[in-house]
Length: 238
Image 1 (cartoon, rainbow, N blue to C red):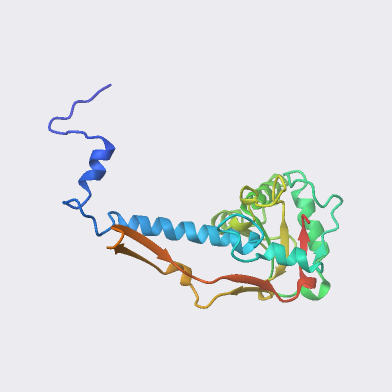
Image 2: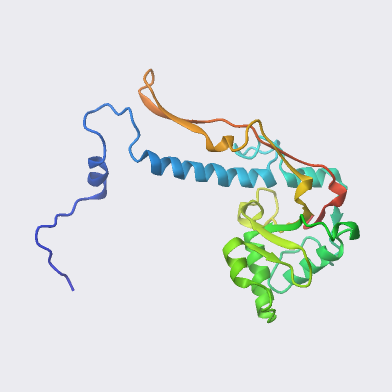
């Protein structure tokens, strides 16, 4: 049912946006600069997280070819411990995800089991499969609320934390596989992120280039990854 409202006029979206522009024909400032900046910073952070895990200097992708990520370094070392799951390359599903995590846990070197910083990383898609599978097994003693909020959970019956990260999502797979299907267990003190200046990726400049009559966005930062002891890493999916 239509409800008439007296005195209210509507306008098309392009007209509304045009009304937000400064008067005149020369724009030296960016309308909605804060909105644009926040969106841009979010995109940079998202792409950087994927590159930290999946970066590869041999790729054509402009965002991933800048440095080698952790997966390439770990795989290239040839020293990481493989999970002894029966089929180490099959897709991770709700029916086998618990067995895969258990297999990885069983292969963690004994001397690392009491290290507080040993963590198992997986994609958010795999993390979701894992928590749903635990719930379906009536393992209600785990903190499902905290897991949903922080994408972190303590693996039931252990002291090992499982963390879901965007960089390992199958949707972000940049290899020749049909899905990433990777689970990586290692100490966070074994992971290194190299840069000239912390949080430099959050620093950028928006300015008017008079010679080109355009507004420009510039962000510059250095980044790289490395692991110290690949023989202390346990992985599934490679």
